[in-house]
Image (cartoon, rainbow, N blue to C red):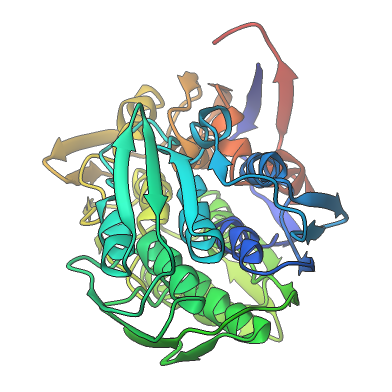
Length: 421
């Protein structure tokens, strides 16, 4: 079990490159199940969730090679359509194999997914969509068992915009017979890239980038080489690392348009930003952090995956700010840990009211989920003295060796192996 030791209260400097997006890679990988052949995904991040998905795909019969961010998946010899609990329990994105397996093979047995230990994140939207496409669905001993002779196109309206359900339905509909219409589809960059990759495979999809998608099913899809987008959540996290330490840093990130709301909020908080040719220059040198309220929303709104990091940032702002999460109403397990560092935060239902303090002080804290871990790292960078963060295996799920990137910005952070839990 590893932990981080951070000696904070110091300004950062320098440049860092942002990795490929975990969330989009986790959709592209199961999409390869829709064809029989050798696929390549470039710019794949080396994070634990990716390795978990590789193991899951290997258990289905996919042959894989992963080196220098280039992931090769040979899907020509799938041996079974059963996604076992031992892999699925670690990650909710495992549900993405449901649609491709069902659509290509007519059968899928997928364990109920796991992942972060906070909040109900039901998969009913995925299952209802598969039913509308003509699948028979049963829940048995913790497994989803889906069967069909062939999926048929249908009209599917999501009451709630869902990235996961949109992605699963897109993949399933690509090999279905006839036309599928998805209304209130997610428009996140991860979904746009998935749809564009499916089109490269030979799928017929209209409305890419909009909330209404039209998919005309085809008989088969072909293998492709595709390039993953940059990770907007890692980019936002690194920018806040610079802002919370009142520093001047640069990040190399090729998709700044995906960060628009975060950049706007950072400017509102008092930092200077220049975006030019894939480089974002942040200058918060000795600036005063202004209080800025945020409310999470589906893309292009403020992402729920940045909520915890923003609370850490606002803990040092002048005045009081309110951070409301409308996506996951109880995603606040990081709040008690931030308060151990001296933050003043009051929870009111799905909102955190943050009264800025003059300084944070180092303490021993514990990670509870992926983005909560990031918020503690940010707070530790700004806190005076030593901060010890336990259970950092959470952060390894979604950030590629974050301590090494922070060291490139001259942060004093060390990974230490420990027997503590």
